[in-house]
Length: 327
Image (spheres, one colour):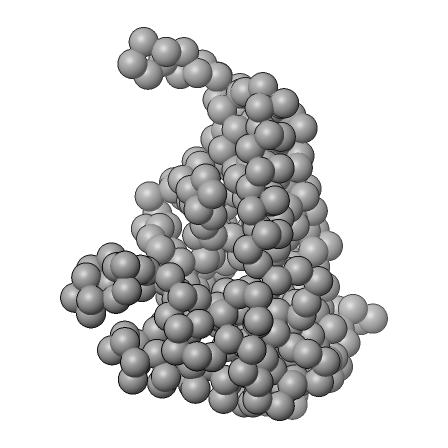
């Protein structure tokens, strides 16, 4: 970054840019050094505008949603971090759709990418709209959930399953409305992880259903989440992706398990700590910040877990956590 460009950029947004803002304030890990420049976007218009101006002045940019699933380096983030605080939810319409002789009523709901996903789940359940009720308790934002194609297994559901369309801001500074197929959703993946597109709004296609029935599913889902995952702790969520069924078979894993947590646990690492970072005694696929963890502590613990699992089971675990900034 050239100092001249940085000054010009800051002048475009007087009183809105924060300098050397600690990123530990904005992540669920509560870890991370300072961002050179920091901006909180409250509307989609502001969001698009700041991205476009940052590109104009060649300012490296990172979009921050709910601060989950990421580990920010101890040296912080060079360039600009945009905190996406957009918040609009709106009904776009309802239409009937007949499949196999059954008439379903589909509701189309448009939501800003900065909306907290758990808030959106509660909205849909209260409106009697089925499709994401199993995600009650999912941290992060709508944009982050699309980026990761967030999932839940009790009952199983992927966020990408119920997306109809989305508005994206492309690397060429154009706004485009794209269909679900554009994202090429897979396990923990979407095309926007590599394309440079930024999701600004998402339109979900949800099925009209009974509110009581949806709350039953949502409450069972969050009860299971609370029973099986550590609560009230500083963490980024699951550390590693589960292994594929093919890997489980080829490596003759115990009971053909695909659970990364099972492998870390049975490698004898549950409760192991390095510095202020600890593999959760409750669920071995969670690394927690016990109070003063650094990004370096977490990275060392990740490397130890991956090495030990490979040594014992022959499987190389893939990180689910995205590393951001300078370590």
